[in-house]
Image (cartoon, rainbow, N blue to C red; front, top):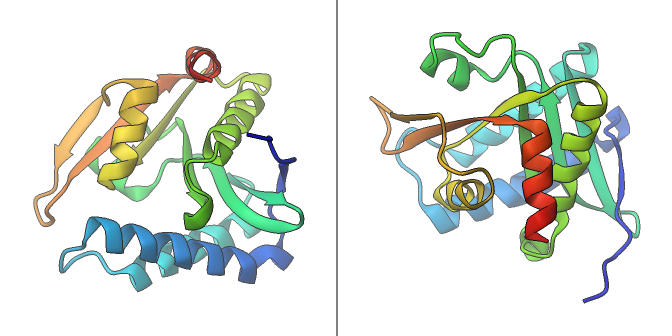
Length: 186
């Protein structure tokens, strides 16, 4: 399969509407495939993502990146400090100084084509070049958990939700080792 040229750049305010559309499609797709419970609403999840993005544009604590193929947005990824409130709450703020990788979203029709892997490698290389050696990330989506387990092994934390019907998994990984593992797999 021919590897398409993927342009990855920092997200800008002008990308907001396109990002919102992408995130809406990915979140809707995930909720349809996974099902939801009374506490998880796709509209609430999208609103939360947009709040995070808007805050990132104002603060320098989070950095969002967009991936394009032929000027079409195909995916996103981000990193920032501190980690999201779910990670902080469920770890008792143990990871509050750690960089979190998040917002890895790929257009549903383009998933399983290597774009997510390429975005993840981009971020890990960027963080390693900045001298960041350990990162965290989380997932409540079952299909994502399966992917992360294959790449990164078992999560450091597996916390059943008291209110929801899911297990919140949180990984803490070595950046260099993770990057090497991803390269070996492909």
